[in-house]
Every structure is written in C-alpha cells, then in structure tokens.
Amino acid sequence: GAVVSQHPSRVICKSGTSVKIECRSLDFQATTMFWYRQFPKQSLMLMATSNEGSKATYEQGVEKDKFLINHASLTLSTLTVTSAHPEDSSFYICSAYASGGGRHNEQFFGPGTRLTVL
Amino acid sequence: GQNIDQPTEMTATEGAIVQINCTYQTSGFNGLFWYQQHAGEAPTFLSYNVLDGLEEKGRFSSFLSRSKGYSYLLLKELQMKDSASYLCAVIRPPSYQKVTFGIGTKLQVIP
Image (tube, rainbow over all chains, first blue to last red; front, side, top):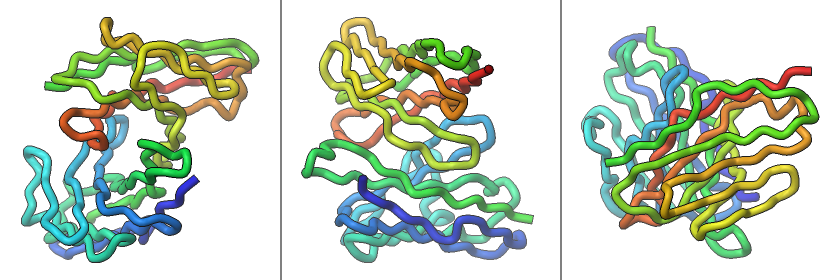
C-alpha cells in the first residue's frame, strides 16, 4: 500500500516553544492531507484539512493561529504547534488518500507523532 | 451532527469469531471505514463499505445497512495479534474524504 511518513515520531518540549511536525507521502502525490489529534483513550479528532497551494481549512474549535499548517508541495504538509502548552500534549496523526490503482478511497495514515509538553 | 456508537470493550477467545457493531446517525453518508489501531500506533485500513451488503477480505468481513445506519466488522479465526482497537469511521458529505471516527472498540483476545 501507499506510505505516509511523519517526523519526528516523538518530541518533548518546554512550554511556550513551537514544534513542527512533517507529514510526507512517499510514493504518491497528495493534494489533500488531513491532521488528526488523539488524546489517550479517545477517538481521532480531525483538526484540519491541508490543501496544497491554498489555505488549510480548520474544524470548529481548532485555533488556526495556534496550529499552523503549510502544504508546501504535493508530498509534504507541515503542522506547527505554536507556543505549546501541556494541554497540547497528544498523539498527532496525518493522513492522505491514494486514488487509482485499486486503492480507491483508501486513507493511509502516518505513524503518528507523540508530543509531550512539559 | 455526527454520532457514531460502538462498544468500548470486547473480549473473545483465540480461534473464535467476534462481531463488532457500529451504529451511526449522521447528516449524510458517503461511505464507512473500519480501521485497526494498536496502542500507540496509527490506524491501518481494514475495509470500506459504501453499498449495502457484506465485503469479505480474508479473515475480516464488513457489513453495511444504510437504511438502518448500521455496520459490523466480523473477525474470524481470532489470533492474539488481533488484540487492538477497531475504529468505525463515517465519511461526511459533501466530502468524499473527511471522516468522523467513533471512539473505537478495544478488543482483547485471550487464549
């Protein structure tokens, strides 16, 4: 299947710092990628849709100025958590769809990034 | 709004069959996914249903009834490695890609 990578896999930072997470589609192009957040024992919550060449669209309740998304190319989207606080500690996961080649409407997830804010 | 319900936990015996149910009340429907998620890892794709009926893929099958807002995931010949959370996710119109996830069913397979 298609491969989506994320970097870093784990990050620990001090409160008030900014953290950038990269999401890459390795063997396919993705005009749209999605960013999710998952707190312990909870479901994945969609944060925003990352659109190549245009602004991201955010879900209700997600602060766009805090979670900056840049979709720089057809294979790369970045999520920057600005001025991180302990309540931002979570598992952040990106995803992308690979269409065609028998993979119609199949969503592939990155391995996730565990963010811990001290 | 979107409301997806599934049991939070289930236990089944190795070698047995288990059925995980999912009911949804959503404003529109463009398809339903089932994902497997091991602790601390990202979800992996299991199945996609958009029409009523049963989709079979090896030991895993998924069923959909759109009129009832109901789906189930059937796992046969359970193995210990099947212990994981199983997530039901509904695609929300007008998108064909944005999904809402249920909370997931944590399945424990015992010897």
